[in-house]
Image 1 (cartoon, helix red, strand yellow):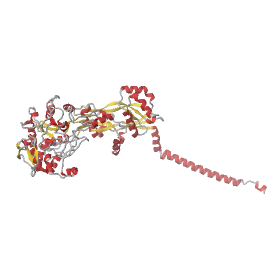
Image 2 (cartoon, helix red, strand yellow):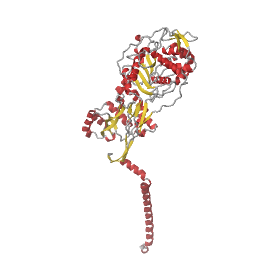
Image 3 (cartoon, helix red, strand yellow):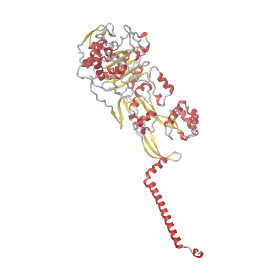
Image 4 (tube, one colour):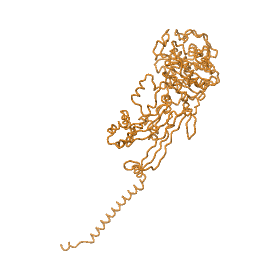
Length: 633
């Protein structure tokens, strides 16, 4: 047995070895196949994906902000431009201790608590590895001090940018508006509109006025450069560049000299003036007083300054020309006349006798005329010249609130005008439905009567009054008031196009001439309510004045401006156009509580003298507030 077991079966062992070698070889082949397949997948199938991932670590896309378009007045004077400013920026991920670094920067660049607060707010909404502004608008001294100390601040650097600047300050704030830092609401809106990518490197956005309304035109298209960076994130070389497309320059219909001239005349008053060209609807001046410096907002206004603006009792943040709502008062009488004539309620020969009051039929309620002894026998022309309330009380009674609302809506009251500013209110053209919703009370006949003279529940903005007057001047053809004159595209001026709207009433009725003749009488005939201001004018002018009550008088109570608080005095309004035969200028003005200087008619005459004669006088006689509401009707 032992001898037999000592002999080995080499044949069997050899076969076993071969089998094992074959299994091992097959295993190696399989593993090699898997490896080759994986390499094929990595190198061939997913080449583009992994190349992109690799390049993202090595290649960066750096957005390049576009240059914002310049805003010019009609004569080519720049009203909003870009100038180079320097700001200090920090990339928090490259700074060991952000708070210590901020404190160390205080004496170097005069860092304030507001600067630090703004930085922290911006950091909270920024992506990682993004440079965040610490302080903007550095002076040359601050830049120099930082340059000397830069070695102490890794991750902090000074960069130059183009920043918006408004050379005429408060004179144009309510028209031009301003740009300011993009906030969370802006980001949300831009993202929703699909525009966020175009603001990748933009710090500011239009917040108000023309800057806001024409943001898409002015902003431009962001460019980018493709750069190679090392493992420390530093740029080695530029691989590709797509230059940004600058925003379009725009020209406004505004006349800067006229704008600043009117602002000087209104100094110290709470007031609004709108000057337009009735032939085109172009706005030559839009002034709201008081105003404020828009440059405060560009770099981020301090909480102290903003609180001061918010708490100012004169409300400088409100654009009185488009957002201020006032009873339009007697300025609406020409439109009431055209409406009544067109509706067949009166004719050019309709007359009534005015004893100084008008009594509501079936009632003992009397509505007084501003002229307590009355105007005597009246027709439509004389009623406009002398601004007789009683005639228009009767007109309002005969028309009724439904027809009044229908016609005044055609003149634009109760609706936005279409002006290219977002900051606009529609005022209120009262209706039965409005009163029921607002006060839960029905409309009474007595509510209609004061509407006939632009009082009661009726409120309007100066820009609405201006649009209505242009409709009158153009015999019912509607001109939308606008500020944009043209846009620069590819080196050419593309003019703004006036939209087409249905005319008001019959443009050939002849009723328009009756109303305009009444306005001519206001300024030129002996009994005209503005005759004393325009009697000696070397050009023909038509006008209509008005007095808007701030509070109601009791029965038999007499208005006396000397005995009431300044804030309770009547608002003074006036609309005018010149020259009468071929109108080139319309002017609408309101002086809240009568203003702080010259009378409304005095200022109106001076504005017209300026545009018609080139008179630049700014020293006007100051007038005491009218003791009686009869003045300046």
